[in-house]
Image (cartoon, rainbow, N blue to C red; front, side, top):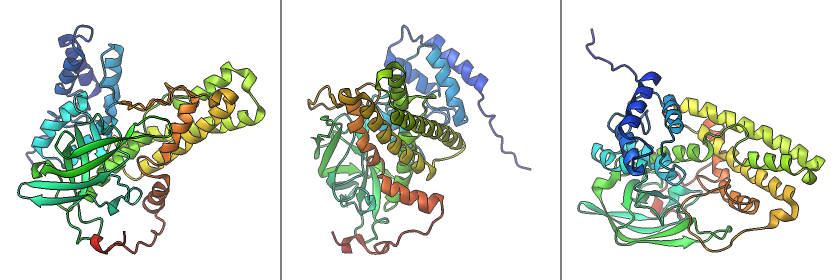
Length: 401
C-alpha cells in the first residue's frame, strides 16, 4: 500500500482566513503599497495556483477570484496588472514551467510586485509572422552566450529590466530546432532601445538592438535548442492574456459605444442601431467564451483555443471602434494629442474615440497576426490538413533570405 500523503487542497474558507491575517498584519490604509504587495506574495495570495513559496498555495486557480474580491473590498492596492502584463501573462508562466529553482526564487516576486518590468524580445524585422525564421544569433563563449541581432515591436522595452528572448544557437538545424530561450538583462552593455512611433503618435513599441550582449548560461530557460518548445508556452499564454481578460457584461469598448448611444439620441440611425446590436451580441458571446476558457485554464495550461479568443478580440475591437467613430460623426475625427510619448500602458477606455480607432489596428498584428491565428485554429483546433511547409526540414542556414 502506498504511503504517499497528499496535502489537502486549500479551499475558499482557508483563503479568506489568510486574507484576514494579511490585512490585520498589514493594514492597507497605513502600509506602504510595495510593502503590502510583497507581504501578499509571501503569504501565497499573489497567484494562489502557483507553488507554495512562489506566491501561491497550490490552490485551485479558480479560487484566485475569492482572494481578489476580499482584497478589493478592503481597498487593498493591486500590482497594476496592465502595466506589467507581459511579466504576469507571459514571462511568469514560462519561468514557472521551465526555470530552475534559483531563477524562480529570484525573478517571480519582483515580477509580480511590479518592481521589475518585463518585455518580450521575439519578433524581428524579417521574422514576425514566421517567428521561427528569426536571425538573432547566440554564440556560446565559455559560461556565456554572446547575442547579436535586432528585435522589433517590443512593448515596454523602454521601461523593462528583464526580457524574455529567443535566439538562434544552431544554424545547421531546421529553423524550429535551432533556437534557445534566454532571460536578457535590459541594462546590460550592448542593449539599445529605440522608440518606434505608431499611427497614434505614441511610441509604445520599440526597436531593440543587441550588439555583443553577454548572457550567462545560468539565464537560459529550457535545454539548448529547445527554445521553440519553451516559446510555445509564452505564446499560448500571451494570446490568452490579450484576448481572454475578464470583463463585466457590457464592459470594455462595447460599453463605451452603448453608453454614447443611450446618452446621445440625436446620433442614432436605424443602420447604426442594427450594427450596434450585432456587435453587442458578439461581444457578449466572446465574453462568455472567455469565461469558459478561464474555467479550462483552472485545470490546466492554455492551448490553441486561446488563439480563437485573441482573434475574436482583435476583430471586435476594430469593428466596434469603427462604429464608434461613425456614430460620433465629426466628433469622431478629433484627436487630442499627437505629441510623441512613451506610455507605460495601453488605455483603450481612458482615451477618446479617435485613439481607440487607430490603436485597434494593431490588435490584429500584436500577439500573433490574425492570419497566423487562423492557421493555428484550422490545424490545431479543427484538425484540418496543414499547409505545405517546404522549409520544415531544411537547415536554417540554407533557407533563402
